[in-house]
Each structure stands twice: as structure tokens, then as C-alpha cells.
Length: 232
Image 1 (cartoon, rainbow, N blue to C red):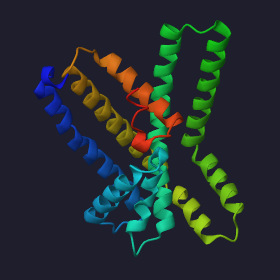
Image 2 (cartoon, rainbow, N blue to C red; image 1 turned 135 degrees about the vertical axis):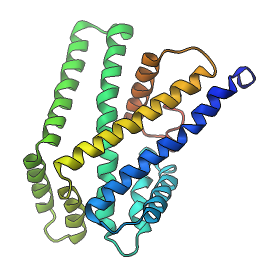
Image 3 (cartoon, rainbow, N blue to C red; image 1 turned 30 degrees about the vertical axis):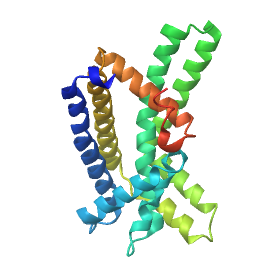
Image 4 (cartoon, rainbow, N blue to C red; image 1 turned 120 degrees about the vertical axis):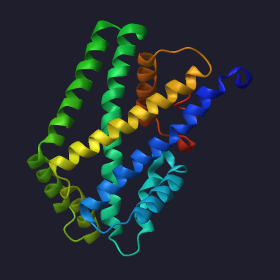
């Protein structure tokens, strides 16, 4: 397969790793500076690389939460909270796009029974819409954070973790989601260019394949670095 590949497409896919990583860097720096305005580019880069390395080992990339371990003079708990915000934004956008792709797959290819289709599509849509409404209602988020923090009144680490969410304003939500969408677009483009090096595929097919695959991988995060599930 490799001997028949178009080397230019494969090289282009490799080069797309650069903007892919740059967007992840800018997003992480943006989140850090919401709370710590004195964070340097070097600290941001090192903590991001540290988190990526740790994230390769545990299931679901949970090792990325170790970004907070890199900082010595900052609240590690708050930084872990900001890391969770970073991961949640990825999950939210990927879940939304992936659900649309999976829905098209169910309707056009799986041919489920009408009742099962409606239960799956209506239930999933209702859940997603509810999550987005809560996300865009700052008063609701503040209420949920306050209630969650109240469950652990004597634990300062839990309190610090929850306050990380409280620093996020509406403007920050839109900026983070925009950067997340751009980051995912680079992933789709990278996949599309790479596959073109081996066989013909249209961009809509690539969009559906990537978003559906990553969505499925998030539901089944039980492999080393996600290897195997996405490829399958």
C-alpha cells in the first residue's frame, strides 16, 4: 500500500501537524491566561507537551490532566480545572458533529426500525440541545458550579477546581469553541489529504468519517492512546 501511495499527499498530511499543534497551543494559552495573566509561552508549551505525553498512556487521554503538575508556583488544582474545560470543549463540539454524522449513518446505511431510529435521534438531539442551552446560559452554569462546590465545603482543592469554571465568561466560551472547531477542521483536513494519498475520497465523506469515528472513540476510550478504535 505504501509503495503505491502519493508521497506529496502523505507529506502534506504530516505538515498539517504544525497548524494542528499551533491551534492547540493557542487555545491552551488562552485558557491559562483567563486566570493567570503572567503565564509565558514557554510554560504553556512545556505543560501542553507534558500533558500530551501523559495523555498517550491512560484510557481516554486522562493523563492530559497532568498538565497542572508542570507548574510549581500556580494552583495545580485550578489548572487541572482549566484542562477539564479544554477537554470538555473538544468533547462538546466533537459530540455535536459526531452525532450528526452517526445519525446520517443510521438513516442512510444501517436501516434501523422506524421506532428505534426516532428514539435514538430525538433522544440524542434533546440531550445535545439541553447541553448547549446550559452552556450558553452563564447564570445556569454559575448555579451548577455553586451547587457542586457546596457538596464539598471543607475541601479547598475541590473548591479551587470548581472556581476554574467560574472564571470562564461568555466571550471566552465563544473563543474556545471557535478554536476547537478550527482544530477539528484541521484534523478532518489532515485525514482527507492523507487518504487521498492512497485512494479517492470526497470531503463530505471525510467529514462524516472523522467526526463519527472520534465520536465513537469517545464512547469507547478503552485502548492505548485510542489506537484501534478510530482506525476500525
